[in-house]
Length: 415
Ligand SMILES: Cc1ncc(COP(=O)(O)O)c(C=O)c1O
Ligand SMILES: N[C@@H](CCCC[NH3+])C(=O)O
Image: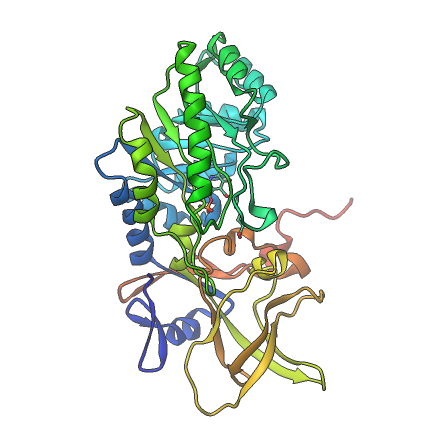
């Protein structure tokens, strides 16, 4: 469910016609809906009601300050993977005491920043990280609260680039060696063990991998208890999919109903780290058709958004829905490859799409709120798009479009 709907043949973001937003703020443009973000956060929060729990939004999905601020105001926690993401959470008014820090390559600087801020928990992903964390915390006269992110070796049945819980993925500590690591951690002066975490992948469409992973993690929790290592929380990760095309995503309530029989009587606080399921449908990318050209084999709609604005289609061969912002009957329905201006044949947003469009028309790529702007780059020296947040009938610019000057800022010519 989202708040981008067609009314009178025109796509609206909440109460505002998207064409009006594009006329005012230009394209390419990311448009977010505050109401959708709030609805999706609440769906997770309510699905876990009655359990001591914390929904830690995965910042990597969409790290715009206004997005984080919206969620922080609802009491969200945050799952971060870098010092930069921590900075964003703090800047947006997020509570460091509700932050978990995942990631396989945390630097000493990032660890210091997080210890200084007093984050809730480090999700430790290797033995060397444990040692670095212990040493850094002791030097700072602190104790780092940790959970190990274990890799349960479960097939999440998703795109290989976004599967994270298999033995051949780089993430987490091998579940078979985790017990010994917990034992080591228990003996470290700079470490306080508080939890256990797992996250098996993204865009999951089936609950069974979640359940398989949970069973393996719970067996480990019991083995740890038998060694006298008791935990305060269990972090079940994120990964719930969204509907881009014909997928049938699992609703947070359905997911929670499946997991809760295993969680309800554990006596542990339950953390979850959803990203895409909160932000995905809360955003669209609006782009304008610059021109149309073709040959006997292909017809191309060249648009002003490109793979630097939205990488998912070319990186994962992801199908993302592309719709005209105004449904027009003037143009004939034709098959197009929707491509951007970048000098790469892989620069496409959609291939073989049936669209009734003409030059200057506006198109919207739907479900672009997650892993859209956060994966944008300046490739081909293209300024990154602006981002706006719609709130009812208000439109707030929450990140200005980059200028050509912005592109060379910080660079220096040789003397
Ligand atoms: C550790 C961790 N937590 C949470 C997420 C969020 O995943 P998603 O956006 O699929 O919910 C990811 C990304 O897959 C992740 O790596
Ligand atoms: N960027 C990916 C998801 C990455 C998940 C991060 N662990 C996507 O767009 O689908």
